[in-house]
Image (cartoon, each protein chain N blue to C red):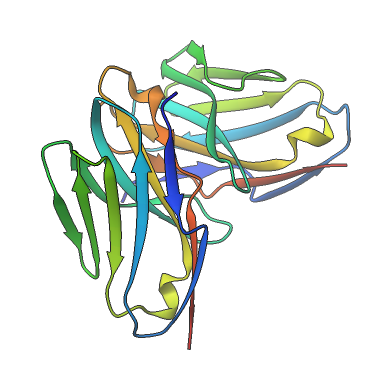
Length: 111
Length: 114
């Protein structure tokens, strides 16, 4: 059974903190993605990676960075958390051309 | 601009009833259209995927249809169950783009009441 695991279901962080969101997949997929989901807006792509150490900006990369040192792990980093980054964050992985599998999501609150 | 719009925004139905969710898109050409189910606080899970040449796909009580001429898709749920309460998201993949070009609708929130 395919699995995409995000390290936390819920996180509360203070403004200005550096925040790490971790995502691990066990399907040997080459592509991994980070999205944020806000009410009424649908999923918006932050960053994606198509190979180890490779990354590309999505639609809303400002305020975020990513790291992919190993194929199975894709990390999203909020360099200095702000209240407008309060959101649901979803990680996904896929083999090229096939459907995406999503993690369970991390609900981040920045206070 | 490529867009995917879903309607209604939210829907309440009684258990056992049928319902239909709509998805209108302007993405053209496109590679495939998918419907996902997202339970509250969870990640989306794929229900159906259709290429531009298909016009219907079923998965149990879920049936998706696609009309490429009118750029409309619908998701029909038969004999609804309480566990169908969730958000349903329509996702279109443009033909020319890489996988990163998935375009998500905002979703329809369905509540099934006993």
